[in-house]
Image (cartoon, rainbow, N blue to C red; front, top):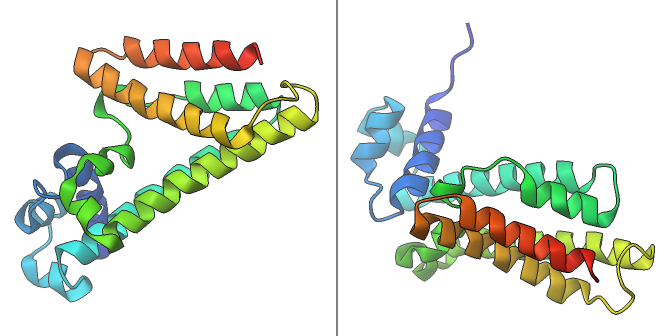
Amino acid sequence: MYSVSVPDRLIESTRELLWERGYVGTSPRAIQQRAGAGQGSMYHHFSGKPDLALAAIGRTAEEMRAGVEEILDGPGTALERVSAYLRREREVLRGCPIGRLTQDPDVMADPALRRPVEETFAWLRDRLAAVLAEGRDRGELGAGLDPGATAATVVAVLQGGYVLARAAGSPEPFHQAVDGVLALLSRI
């Protein structure tokens, strides 16, 4: 029978709690309770909450990158692949697990915790810019397209869509934002 290791349970529990409650709201006790692990186990595997949070943020970032790569490396035109990424199934009302960390002052104040957040968004902008540049170079998108600026816009619309949806208590504003940016891209 396969069993999940204590470090993996601790990391997964921390990931969930960071997404739900943020860094300040994620106590070591809550992590241990959710993971079904004792204090000794937690501190045997991790030096403390910051170390565990860093592992959790890193895992979330890795999973996000893998999911994005799968879509953006898939078949279709640049616009079809960007559209597939923007329209993929998401828990819109929960927000982006990486984007939500930018609202957490403790994460943003700690360079070690902020680094994977910054790196993930920089990677996402670069990856989208590469797909958009490919589309421009193939003639699928207008020759005047600025891939970097457009990629930053796509990421900003996506993150802003989460905020609008959470504020409205409905995923509809998110979907409207995605529809809007895709309509703009299709006219370029």
